[in-house]
Amino acid sequence: MHRFLVALIACYITSSVMAQSPPNIVLIIADDMNWDDCGAYGHPAIRTPNIDRLAAEGMRFEHAYLTTNSCSPSRASIITGKYPHNTGAEQLHWPLPESSDTFVGRLQSAGYYTAAAGKWHMGDAVRDHFDKIYEASTAGFVLPSGKDGQPAKMIAAQPSGCEDWERACEERPKDQPFFLWLAALDPHREYNDGALDPPHTHDDVIVPPHLPDVPDVREDLRLYYDEIGRLDSYVGKVMRKLAEQGVADNTVVLFISDNGRPFPRDKTSLYDGGIRTPWIVRYPDQVKAGQTTKALVSAVDIGATFLELAGVEGSEAFSASSKSFIPVLKDSTQSHREFAFAEDHWHDYEDHARAVATQQYKLIRNDYVDLPPTPSADAGRGLTWQAMLRLYDAGELTPEQSACFTSPRAKWELYDLQRDPGELHNRFEDPAYHSVRTRLQTALTDWTKRTGDYLPSRRTPDEFDRVTGEPDHSVRVRPRPSKKEMFGTNGAY
Image 1 (cartoon, rainbow, N blue to C red):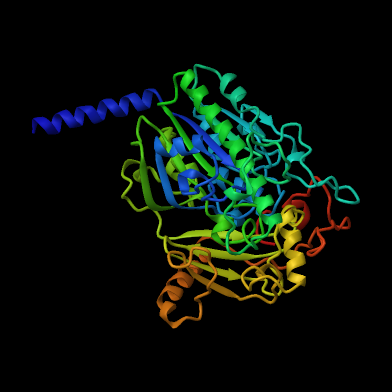
Image 2: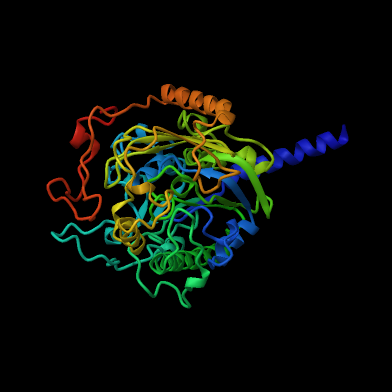
């Protein structure tokens, strides 16, 4: 009985302290970084000592998924705790509507100082949810609109997008808990030499099987690795700044990416190279160091988790889709979600697809089977896609490497992620996977009804030629009109 009372008193004291001193929160978002392209997730050559240190000092999630495969829709989903089709901003460059409820706004109302530094990409309606914004130039991620679409190079004054991260830490009020949205441009294209010194080499590169192993592809990946290395250096600067300020132990740091690597069959796809994300939580006051969890989490859960950590009243009602993963932070063996759902919408080119994943399986439903899964326009301008065009014309690509050129494509795709991590072998018609197929199709149907998902009544025109990558100026306008301006609604269209 005595031990019980001691434990009860200790719990009360801890709760009281947390109520008096809510944690600071820092969300670090890489731009187009694959989930396993860092040392913490097993890559043997990419130099990421600071990201690796985050994982060593916190908890690494092995099965974390984004709700979409595209930059601005992913950010809109994260900040609202809603699936993309519920945000009114599910297509690339669509701004969030004025009515948007965000976890950042709720933190601000609860007394948090809120700031964003780096890539913005969410429109003007939610700017006032942040007390201060240090915005990186859109030149770092929006392709030029000139007649010839040039220049095909990074022209932003702050090419990393992380240059103001330390400043955001320094200029915050010291008498308030704070939330920082730190969004990189790294490793988004375009790529140029000089991002990292010394640079990675071609020998460091591991070419995934869905890409051809030729010199141009190795060079493209090498440059991508360098931008991850540059991003990592800024992660280190932020962590050192928090330590210098004496707040590192009472600060929750979550490191993720907004979507996968900007290469064919990765970004804008529903394969793991498009929607799986690194997910590392460091919070020394509450999370034990060096842990790994197999719990399945979704980016839609970030808002509810942050609000609960901050002790914001009514956090459980933030969004019907957002589910706090605090139980996993307390016990890494806890489960969280049975299924993670993801969406594919217009991104430079029209497409529409849905996916549902577990720790072992993934089901993809392609709604526009007549369209090939063309990679994003920025990837289309890169060395890899240009090499693939030449090799495809010469008949030198494998069937898996030729998938981006294929139409019609399969309506359904089913993958065993444990046996086939590259998602190269579609098991949908395999009788051995019949029960898995049925279970995942049922889950997708239920989610569709529960969240009000829908198939658009009309398609959005492509902005680029699918082969040459040249812009179509009859439809390409910047800034891009909102969903409301284009279709007269923020809902089904």
